[in-house]
Length: 325
Image (tube, rainbow, N blue to C red; front, side):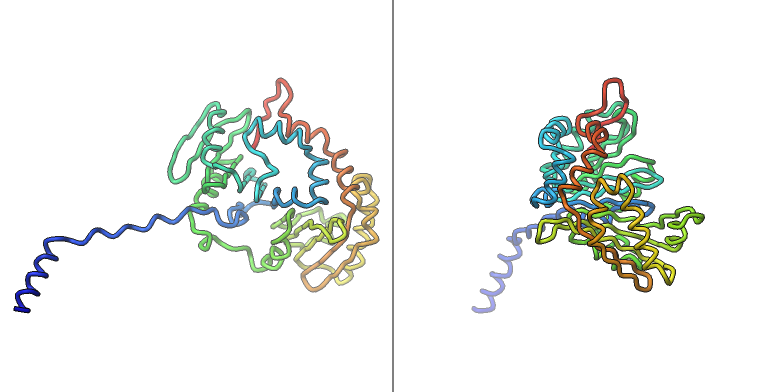
């Protein structure tokens, strides 16, 4: 009896296949660290966290001196993007062009499609593997793609540059090439800074000048800005490479000379000079100083007023300059 019962249960099971298992949803696409998408040939890379800059009183003062709230509202009305709300921004420039990577958009795909509506002519409009539009805005060609739900890449340059960035974006972040060994420590120095500048290639200055000789074997450099507990701005510069044995005194003399120039003095360099500290070891130069954000804000506003007005308010009548991201 038990034998026939087992056979009946087995036949019943064969006649009623189990419900198909639900497939797991595909993993969400992620841009990963934006610096990992910067082109290899970039000579200057700016890294910023605009939302963090606006949250801190000292850095907010500097940002507002350069871009006030009214200007930002006009910029947002024209482009649909409020730069102050971005969680992360990377701008990389080199011989092949400029790449802007912005994270923090509410809907990256919508931003790309909207930009495509302003392209004339439009050269490319695709939906996979990224929502992407390419064409001319004003006089320059732009290639724009939604790297993930909240991250956009804006590329101005050669088609090869755009292909390089988009191919890299399709790789999982863990499979992208890391920085050269000589830059690992250097990049760690700026990892948490709300604003930083990376020069990943040698400056290549003329060798017949004092600064050119001093930096003849320089390989890479960074500049980072943070806020101190006292509300000042802490400036941190780091260089890696090979430097002369008497580099400490040479770098101090260079800093003192630069601080006396009109532009540097207007930006607060002369007032910051007494706070300057230098540490020179094999292959690494560390310079630290503090600056008053009020002085820096006033200096930047004065030095960049014309450029800021054109960037935020748009090109003047008759100009072919495009609106950027």
